[in-house]
Image 1 (spheres, rainbow, N blue to C red):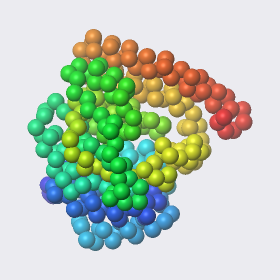
Image 2: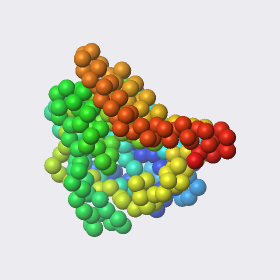
Image 3: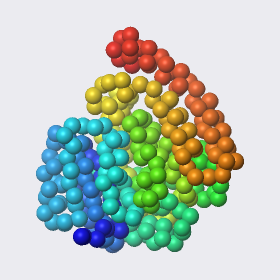
Length: 297
């Protein structure tokens, strides 16, 4: 049998032909080469497949899978994680760029710290080309010893979720529910990972994140974000805040920790729900509109 690679990189993509070659070339040029690159195409309608197949001819580490229909972004993110064979896992968008030593440096730091589940470098944001990037100053590091303190720090400090693009221990990731099909489920996942171990931040700026309306949901209008998550309108679009709150509670109940830590984590999760009570009320209004008018408000 072929020995599994040490690292798996998962790249979900939908209509990414404009940038994906640039991103793939950056990953395939990494100084650390023992990895597989799993690309899951969410039924793209552009030339995404052609670009990926060109890269496959040049590098056998690229694996291509095509979904029969657009699953929505979160299920596709989870799909590539489930397909991973490596001891360590990294998500990659189809439009960002990683400096050549990204994997090498993150791997070295993870292997040096058994208490750590995720390592990420500092970030630069860019449009058009990485040569015109600017430093992002709010990348997170979560080094508290207590799981409840790490959970609280993650939820109180995370802004752009750049750390999701770091290197993660696959066994830790498999203890979570990955990225469930609701908005901000990536942050719920990060909270769960924080309960399982520390996050370390490299001083080098090795991650370049593309910040354009076509690639960053924070720059898109609500209708575009909704379509991004739910290509087909159905009842799954309902109860977004409630699902998020349930996800936090599940993480607190499933992560291994002493009873006192579990209670402190659940208490903080309840506070998050209280602080977001307006969005929980919006869930009720949206459900009413959906079942009486056929669409959320």
